[in-house]
Length: 421
Image (cartoon, rainbow, N blue to C red; front, side, top):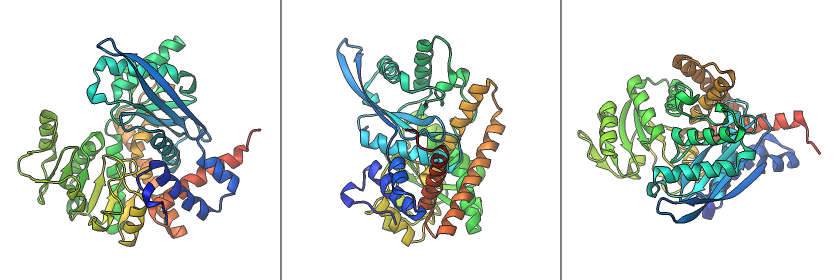
């Protein structure tokens, strides 16, 4: 099983490395290939001078880590947070490599971030930070090199600024340099709901393994941002019973099911779900431990740990967030028989439709939403089956199976290409 020093349980990079080591060992990889796969291709640190609205000059730190270019251009989001660290970005970049390989799309992994607090920045300050960050990493990104996307605290407007800055420097419009853009700038239909839709697709597949119907299935969603809210909406429309939801401030619960359309309206108007009618309040951590059939953590990293994994009562865990479960918690969940759909499979709907957006931009021809959703389902169902069959073949849990499948695909590419020297 994947193990990590308990002192480093919450390190994104150490968690990724622990799982990688177990999967690589079971694959019997050559030591040199193993070192190659673990090592990022490039790590970029930039310092971003920005004149603030009050005239004061501030300097922000930005990162872009490109983990692998073996299977194609790098792909990964850009996040804005005061908690951003190089360790976190390095780990998430590697996770993107495995995520792209699991769903078998021709990208490697990258991740970017700026150490800042968007809640205390104006729109014009965010724009200046974004544009200068883009200019600093301009030589390392682009449709054939590295394609950024939205992530924590960034959105389609952020991507529009990056696309415009990149295009102005090249003196022609390059829509394929980022994904997650507004539709009018080359964005793809179906992109906003893609990660949440992907979570529902893999949940459907998990239910089939247990002979359950959607209407019999109680779901708790932890996190009500884009992923959690879209997953809740789509699952509610499909017949699932959403009995609990938590956002960054609080949680709500109703054993008979929540009215998700009304909750979405309430959340939009009040910027919180707290106080939603026909529900009872519940703690953000307590909600994870409630009895349910499916638990969908869709917020941040490290919410299921060695401290609470023994109290998880869900039969199926679908990871909508990146790295919501720590390696020690993995072991506990496996021993308790929880069927885990790991993040690099469960939330790969976003990067899959980002791939579709990149393809459409390069073609200059855009698909109807129904086609996008149909192709997303085809890829995620195939990936789910690949992971489960790999796990059964090698007698490992789904997370290690997903890593093994992804690492095997990247390693095979490296062996075919050879090492340039």
